[in-house]
Amino acid sequence: MLARIRSLHCSMPKCPSIRIPGMEKAESSERSAGPESAVELEDRDPNNLNQHLQVMWDDVIGEPEGIRSPECAWRLSGHCFRLSRGCCYILLSVLVAPFFALCLGFTFACLAFQHIWCIAPCLRIWKIICATMRNILAAVTQAIIRPIMEAMGYCCHNIRVFNQRLPDGPYQKDDLLIV
Image (cartoon, rainbow, N blue to C red; front, side):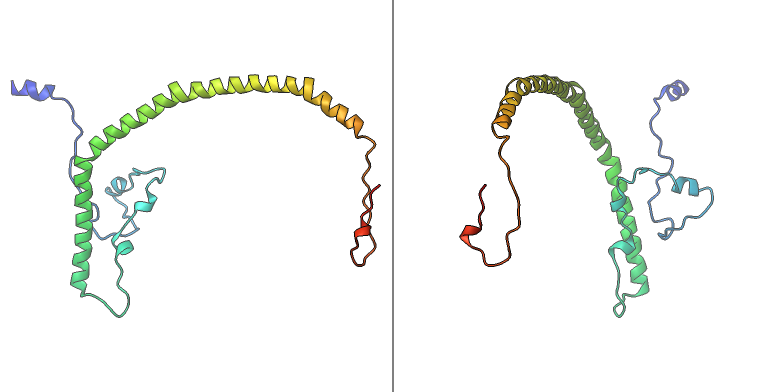
């Protein structure tokens, strides 16, 4: 009976071992080549969405020359920082992330639904209405505004504007030349 229950259990995501980031070895940009390097090189942010969140011990705390804590305090502080950061992140990832992912899934599903079923059809309707209005306005322009502007052009076709440089000297009111 127990064997039957074991064979029927549903598959749950497995977490073979919990690693606390930064506690295995000191933080460095160099990665060792070996069997663990494939796990370390797993890219969970291929589009660099969270590149600004890469906060390491050296990015947060720095002691200037002339004032230094004892080396044991510095190392212990670094380990406490990495441990608390890793444990807190794991705890939040386990407790909050699934519910937050569920909410984000609903949000993006609603957003996709809104764009597919509401916004895209409204934009299509707007494009059709604008095309119709463009045709109407083009006809009105050709039928009414263009003939009026051509008539005004025929009325004003004898107006000439001449530009000439006046002699240098003091400005006088009589320098204005109207033809």
